[in-house]
Image (cartoon, rainbow, N blue to C red; front, side, top):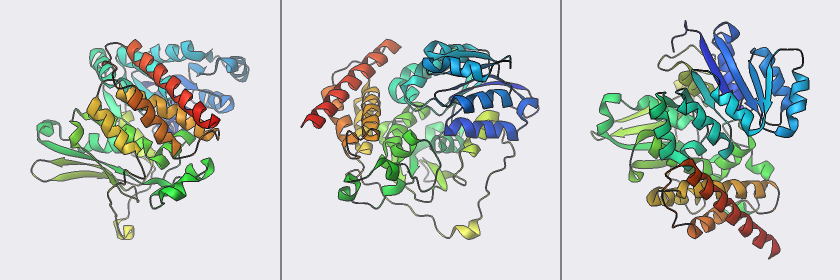
Length: 394
């Protein structure tokens, strides 16, 4: 949207790393003088959510934790800002009039409100992976029916979105997702077996929340991005490639049938992709690091190791099978992730749990409604919990 136009926006997940970066971009581009913040949502960080709501003059602030409703209400007492909580509060935020919605709630909790925003025709800046991984076909259909635009915010998908030539979609031969390789790029499986949460959360290039950081370390994030790419760009599974690029400068690439490869480069800073999504198709001036090619020295690329990082293999399996396999893989991984964080299983066990659940749930029909997605999600979570319980009892 042109920089001169006032814009109503909503942030679903404003207190996470993506949400905070989005508000930084909003501030850079004019803050309250240019943007009306219809709604902000967060979870347990009530102090930050209340601060954001007051700073940006939000009309509505929502905590996803129903038990923290009074805390948020007290924090915003006397400000005139409306307060809500729980799933109904998230739906209220999504339904509020706003032309642009940042979908940054982590996990399947973000699915229903993002779908509601898409259905009413908002442009969706998508940072929630589960919308496409778990309910890709249904979500894309909802966006199309609503009449909004789906703009990816993940740096990799944003890069592809920018490198795709609209009138040459038919000539796309492959898309190449780059991966940093995370903190364990050169570790052996034996070394990775003893990884702790604190070690896994230390990403070499990006500053992210716990879930995304550990997903990067295990490459489950990249696995989910492979499934997302199929739905975002309407390509076949065999057209999706992953390459490890430790410097995180080349964010992703599009290969065309004439042999050309178009890449999008930039410093590893999510604000670039967020700014592009917020003002698409314009490119706003942003205070982010500029690349100094004379100082880059080198850009390295290497093939990913699907033995040490089996999540990539599981993604290919989900893509090949189609249907609800993405939902199954994602749900099982979410349960396994929490078990790892809680100390119930090891780092490598996360992929093993996900694969076990996927091999148990191979006969689910494709989704025809969101209830099918939620049913598969619930069943996969149950199986994952059972598998974890068996491991603890062994």
